[in-house]
Amino acid sequence: MAIEKQRPSLVYKIWGGEKLAQMKGVPAQKGNEYLGETWEVSAHPQGPSFSNDGTPLSEKYSTKDLPYLIKFIDTSDNLSVQVHPGDEYAMRVEKEKGKSECWFILSAHEGAGIYLGLKKGVEREELEAAIRKSADVSSLMHFYPVKKGDFFFVPAGTLHAIGKGVQLAEVQQCSGVTYRVWDWNRLDDEGNSRELHIDKALDVISFNSAENELAHFSFSQCQREFKELISHEDFSVHYYSVSERQTLSSYKRPSSIICLEGEVEVRSDDKSVKLKAFEAALIEENSSYEVLPGEELSNLLYVF
Image (cartoon, rainbow, N blue to C red; front, side, top):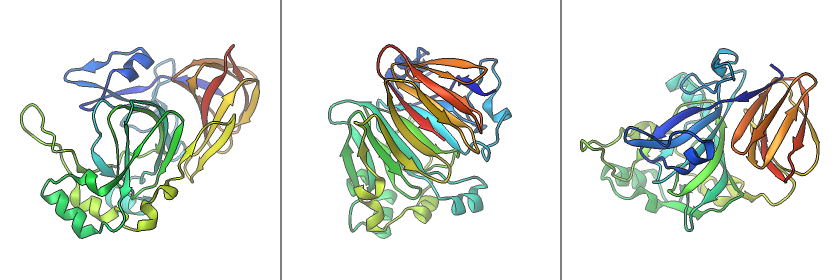
């Protein structure tokens, strides 16, 4: 394989929008839902990415061999308020890994933002009471306006929601475990609300004040040519603003290049692929390769 361009799984959601579909050149709508996510590099069986010959990545790698998953997300409405469990709880209860994740903001409407962490002093009893009576749970959370280039780490156990009007790249542990806490009291066309997972969520939400403050989420703004954004057991994320040839290496697991702006060519000894904005390539483990920018400055994420 060495280097292989990936085709994503398309995920349509009630909160999806049209911008991601325009970015990717794919249909924006499926039934009553709009494109909300593209799973760009994924070995998860619920939504694998694909090689050019149509082979799912999940047939080549297990979630243990490729423990991270990369998505693009586009919101025209608020996502549900939710939380992900850590590894120990998820393995015991769901027989799957937990999910920590991180967000790189691609663009955002004026005033758009994210809900991240509980406000100081909010305890389990207050949160549970609000959930049970369908009160506005977001009023108990921090809200941060966002702009292009912002980066947030969202550890497992953090109550969170991506607000409407945000486009971002997400790197997460390769897990599908999400506990929905509150869904803005939305109803579908038949008057039904989405399923909530209140008891499990309350088991894993962190009520530690220090773990709910902005400093805990490693907020940063990407304005340099290179920046290490986060290092986690299952993924490390680096940001590059590339104006000249770069030599990179993958290690004991595959690495990924995600082009955010411009164009790049990713080249190894025997193969090369060209990536336009919002395209991704997977590089097999223990490989060295070169990244060559196009005529203009190219911005990318390197994940390994």
